[in-house]
Amino acid sequence: MRLLLLLGASMVLALGVVGSGAFAAGPETCSGTLAAGTHGSVVASGTCSVAPFANVTINGNLTLADGAVFNALFSPGAVHVTGNVKVGEGALLGLGYGAKTVVVDGNIQANKPLSVYLGGTTVHGNVVSNGGGTAARFYNFPIKDNMIDGNLIIHGWQGGWWGAIANTVGGNVDVANNSSVVHPTDDAACGAAGTFPSGCAATAGADPDSSEVQSRGTTNPQHISGNLICHGNTPAAQINPGDGGAANIVDGNKIGECAGL
Image 1 (spheres, helix red, strand yellow):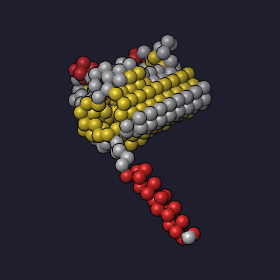
Image 2 (cartoon, rainbow, N blue to C red; image 1 turned 180 degrees about the vertical axis):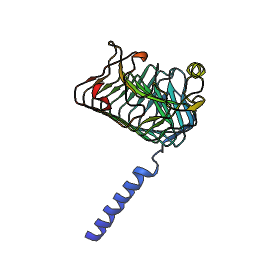
Image 3 (cartoon, one colour; image 1 turned 60 degrees about the vertical axis):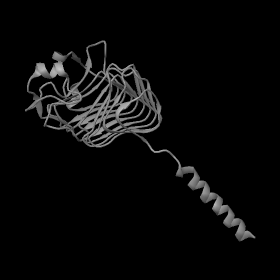
Image 4 (cartoon, one colour; image 1 turned 90 degrees about the vertical axis):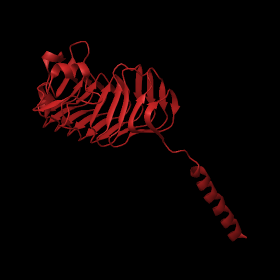
């Protein structure tokens, strides 16, 4: 009798395990337009763009497959990701910059991305990017006007221009071994066309305006609650007065290239 009861309980448990996952929906694949409304986890493949003025909620993670583009810049309404944003190798992420409201409840994690364009976005976790970039085209890597509750870490990106400007960061800012290796072939044409998502024609040689780690004047400060750590960047991390730059507000220590910033 005990054996029968044990076997029966095991079968119930097994059926429960099978039943709980066998019919669970996988993540939605987006290649084209991500419509307004609520979605589960989303995998961007190819180019996935949020519909103009659409309010979008992703209940789960947003994952950019290798080489994918996710475009939620400028025209979307409110974009809310309740999980993490994961950016694959050679992928291009665009969030914010004029969108109504953009919030990521988790982390933004980029592994060898083509680039990350992040502006006016609230991230309740960390923003971490490791490696990536290209010398074939001129791309920016702009991290501007964001609220980041955790750390901001950018390591080993190589491309056109990169910078961290006017962010509010609850943890540390750590930027290391990032290199500008190309500049625009035609500054005016590149500025007019913008660099997202196709980049601009590039010429070898560093962009002297790159590596800006700074406030935007005195009215829009970059406030870092932790430490500001800068090592091995080319050009060295800088404040660029010609671009409206001003000193950072740092509650912790200023280390390396950023000791005077």
